[in-house]
Amino acid sequence: MKLLAIDTSNRPLSVAVLEDTQILATTTTNVGRNHSSTLLPIIEQAMAQAKLAPADLDRIVVAAGPGSYTGLRIGVTTAKTLAFTLDKALVGVSSLAVLAGNIVTEGQLVAPLFDARRDNIFAGLYRIKNQRPVAVIADQHISVAEWSQRLASYDEPITFVGADVDQYADALQQSLAKQFVRAAPQLDLPQAVVLGLMGRTLTPVSEIHNFVPNYLRLTQAERDWQAKHPEKEHAPYVEKI
Image (tube, rainbow, N blue to C red):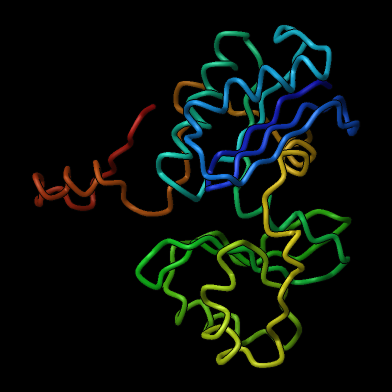
């Protein structure tokens, strides 16, 4: 199976081309440039390095969130467009699971997180089984204080991974004491290779057009819509891209 993996869900941008478990090409940057202008050239470069034409691909794998609204929209829109245009399978993978996948210690509890501002984070808890992250607590948008309380019940080390961990390290250490373990900094960036390896065995989405990012919180469009329709506050609003 030949696949293209794309992760623009946060500040880093990562692209990889794989054939089964073999890495044909990969690029990861963390320079904070505009993903909308750099993603396609990086994809083209990776495909050229892999010596593949777009038609050679079997599936497109994309980091589906949570993360940056803008980053998610860029990555998911690009992946959907490629999958639809090329008539290829599309697979979405949790952005937090991809980050947790940087840890390979068997049995380890891993807590990947992204900053969500105002002392809130996107976070999930995973356990590494057979070198794959398996969800223990589902991804969520949560305050740092509440997240610390939820993790306090686990009487074992928890490895925190992500570029935003240091921003909240003091608060986490105060609450979790000996449980808190900081992953090595070189593991903080999500890798499209990990994304691709995870996505190659997952079931593709059934309807490409209906696939949307997993924002885990209201978008500005949703907040505006609910403000204008208070009587329908709990009605679903789906932002198609």
